[in-house]
Length: 274
Length: 294
Image (tube, rainbow over all chains, first blue to last red; front, top):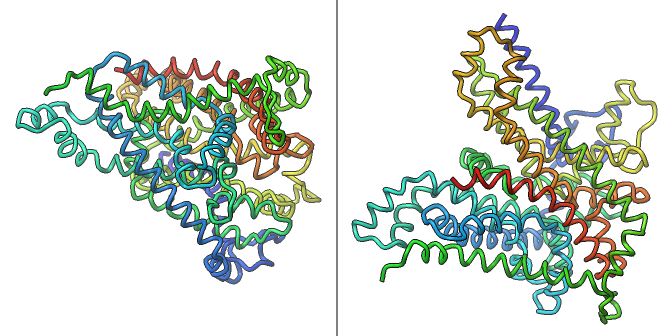
């Protein structure tokens, strides 16, 4: 009896997982198919002939490589700046009682309620006027809107779980507050910090509308904007596009599986924010 | 010099606070003023026109059309997320001896759609929903369809297709959060219930569901807010078409600002959208903050 149950359960799980993962599987197979095999009836689940031509074409396109560089520069900077500032704030929120603390948390949450498409209007006008339009710093600054509050709350969640006694012990032994933070808290929460940084990276890497509106020149184009531009063309080369997709989501998927435990804990502990 | 806990606390949150004021509150104030102005970008002149933008917006059918689409999109997405999220979480919360490892793998794998960029997700689904793509191909092979359906171009099919796409992308997040909240239910409650003779269904309605309702409420609010600002998936798959059938409020604002170049009117549309969101936002903050501050 339990054995039957077990296999029914297993089959249900497999069906659900297949349905959810199918689009990703499809992306991968199309990226290694030949062009005439993209659309067939009946569908061909496994490509007849595997070719890496699409990857070769994509990786030898200087415009695409420039977009990779742009996305890497902006996303890494956003991740580092967010984690640095958010760690300081998260530590303060987890260790000190001060008037206005609750108000501050509510303020951070409420900034996330503003629709990005509303913020894009003043950003566009202000960045144009200040000369930050179409520059890396301009773009990074606007991305912090999404990353700072979320990262601060996730990190606060990680810090709360570290006993305050450890700080106190360090302080008694003559450490300064900063010393206690750097020598005790940082090493203990290091995986959590990396997971938070990955989150900041993910938000910046995947951002579309800000990248679309706040950059214009070809050498400031982000990866998501490149994909968007290719979708707008009359004749879409699906193999090449799926190869780009694979390259774009590869770092995130690898990062996620390496840090899965901390990532999921951060999501649930830092709770459902943004 | 020894700083008080209060001062250190304030110093620690100051950098984040200052950044947020600079990049959200000040721009919000700016856009609030912009909503009362006539600002047609090519003219480079602005003039104060009071509530004219608002009055005009509320009289145009395009705005109400977008409003309706946003509501339908949000409502169906949140409903489907909750129902499917709870079902899948229940499925993945079952434990059988010898299957613990595979259960963990399933849990990890299904989160992948949530990691994808909106642009990536949009392009994948354009292939799948292509007139000759996988969905039509499967349905035609099974004999369910004679001719291909134009999923992302037909008047009636487009909005449901876009909803499916959004549901797929955010569902993993729901499953992860609901599963975590199910796992925190003490096992002894179920043991006690089975001793008292309660079946699986009764256990679900009297133990599991009451336990996860707070998470479901929070998730529902977050999802409403998220789906209200959904832009890239729709913009990149249908561009708001055909004939405005999927043009939700964010897309309307985008087109008003960056195609019609009417920034004043776009600002007013944005403020109205923000006000609708605010109602849900207040409930969400009320729900989540007491738990946050312990």
